[in-house]
Image (cartoon, rainbow, N blue to C red):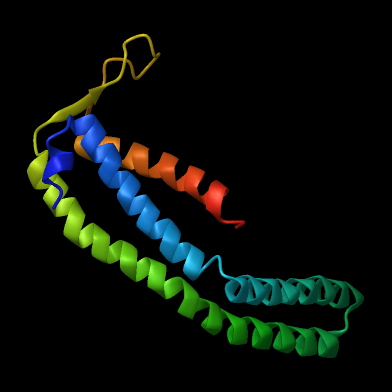
Length: 155
């Protein structure tokens, strides 16, 4: 299935594979974590933050009963919405684990001892470093994840 991609230079093939993985993760996140419902739950969880400010004020005034009452309300809100939010965050985590279990061993076998990229010597401290497939995958993954999140999170 990935033979046409693997036939390319390792730099390009790992970048393309990482792009595919990132696209899948962005799609899953868009349908779950970045959905309207999940954002509403996050907003409600932030409401419990205002209770913390009130708790601090009550503590400064020495109002123990009010502190206990506000703490109880805050914990109720957090526990209610945290369990709902966990349902949304579980799917992306499972998808990423499955992708990692399937693709990382395959990438390791395909590019086992290959030096994928050499950092130019003009770059101070790290110039001349030879990067394996894993380091190139991590660099590509970080960059694509950041760019993808910025582009698609708000839409």
